[in-house]
Image: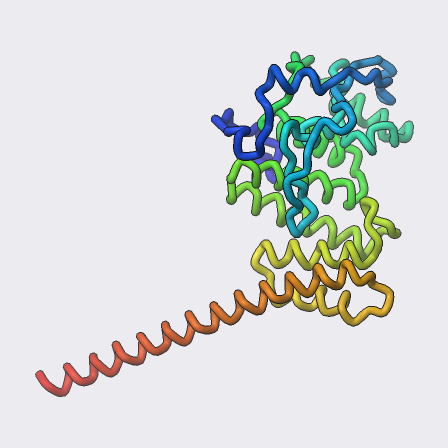
Length: 274
């Protein structure tokens, strides 16, 4: 695993206005502290949480990323114990066995330096915390599905930053781990049934340029009698995008071949008329 995966994001001048997020001092009124007991060191800490109905959904992307206004719940999705450095996506935070606890104490806590986190989180801090969670998952050799979702959420954060290069890098890692989880873990995976997982794998393939492979996964969903009509409709929409893309590439290829033939013909003509 490349060390660049865990590098800290560069401090950006990211404009929250793209998401319709309120200014930080206004967001503060939408947050509260939730007392959490760390399963590694038994210390108590306050996790920042969002009051119910404080955010608004703007739209949903085809890989299940939700775009929010007012305040972004993804920024608060990772809990971090500031005493020992244990971090995980909040739904996984308490699911830790004694063996993993000892590994975190040895590999993470022994090197941890306390952080002074602000009251309101921004996108760069969210990426930093997601990467810390991912580091913990790799340290304890967590299931591929947990790493996959963590990678995917980091990719989504880079999408918000309009950082296409990093988004693509993390989408590829998410795809690899979801593929691993599909073949080696029981369903549901990250709350998704088999066919929703198949759709997501196909969609991540489409987004990372593996369009032919994506069509194979999508076709398996469409031909299943057990897949829901909702997921089949989503598959049809993405298949149409792929077909349009492949047609465009085919036309571009034909145009390039025609130009090449014209150049060759012109070259021969010039050769015989010197």
